[in-house]
Image (cartoon, rainbow, N blue to C red; front, top):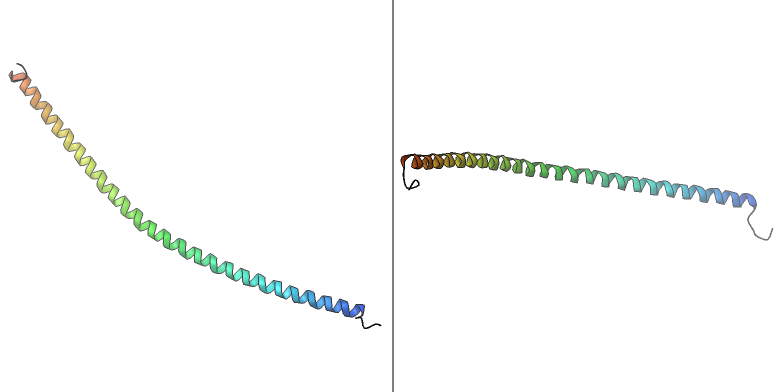
Length: 102
């Protein structure tokens, strides 16, 4: 009939085309999933490295803070002791009738 394909042939071609598209979609989906898994693993590795670096930095910062805190406490105690010593000297000067009494 006029060189046109029959309805059966058209349906068979459509089925084959549909199968071909399904295979292509499946292959594309698998490729995208593999790429996604690869990127996810790279991100995990990157995050592990960053966390390790942060841990090292924070450990160092905490140690430095503890050292500085100890220095501040020591300086505070020393300042208090010197203040008390000066106040005792001033009290003695007042009692002895020194220059402060005049």
